[in-house]
Image (cartoon, rainbow, N blue to C red; front, side, top):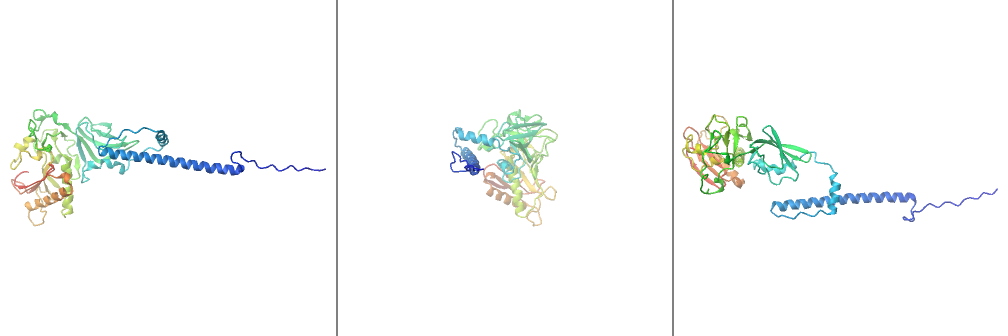
Length: 384
């Protein structure tokens, strides 16, 4: 019996990939798929980077006042947005993401408060989509970096997407508007009349009527405004039993005082306590309260940006022997003056008055420091 062998079946060739076997075709297809995926990933990344660069340019232009028209949304951007929208949301807020708030800390980095009139912006260059979470007076409010309408002291936190982070030991103080002063008073607390309140033109904007006041109560008078100072340190020395009290206090003054303390320590004079002999003075107190000798009619104390200070580490209520000559006199005040001079040289935005006073009228030597906006120097007796 004769057997006939069948001819071998040729391997099937693909009609598109001519000359390839099935196994070779599968290998080729897999490699091609990986190449396509890699290309898509690179393309999406490039689109995302381009969008980020465009956003950065827009932010820089906005910072210098250049306005650009809103860009047309292209199909490419729509596709990129769709692809990127499925990415992870912000789970935390890093220190770098909080840098836009650093101006609130001042040049010293020590400020623990800022003040705003109701409804005013809290910061510039806030991140798009970011919000503030403000807690105070038993309530919590959320806004796009706008000060609350109700005056008070608020704890400040930042919300970005799904993450929230608070500013440690920092207070946003919303002011009581100046217009609430009627007949020289707010409530039972007597303030008086500012020099140009009823007409006249102030010589500089620094002498215009204040925007508003910090309301101080027995519950909040110990609120820290920096590591060395509290709200109560700057209150006018009268009306002891009247509450609430009203205070003017510019953050720039506290910033300058903290920098002066830092400079004193750099000079070899440790400062554990700097005493505020006189901070804010109401116009009425400036004219007739306490010892009025040497007070200026346009005293910066009435504007919340001046303080008379001395270093009192031993707590005896008088200036310490800073220069180590065995006695306390005006030369010790001059040491503080030297530190304040160095602060102004390094921080022109804090320029102001520095006056040196000798012992007089029941108190030791002290230094007047303010941030009036222009340089002023003097020596005197009595009260700054």
